[in-house]
Length: 119
Image (tube, rainbow, N blue to C red; front, top):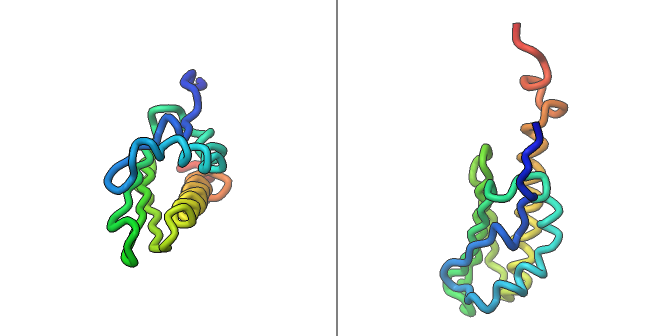
């Protein structure tokens, strides 16, 4: 049976926390379009992306993206790049990689334990 919910998107899943202003949300959603293609395989409401920046605009700036997807361990991407836009792109690319890796590990063709029936 197929889930009738629309697919998850950055727009529907992104929650901003410390260090990111609400008026920056639209630009982030637009810049993270590549992440939408990775989230498409999950139903809306099963993905939460939590973005925060600590010590913004300082040499010790740290951007963090937590990706919480039902049925998967929490994935955390971090960046200490000084330029915020570059740091956000770094987070997006790391999240795409981590989600892809997690999906590949859980799919039967890549996991012998899931592929072989138990007796």
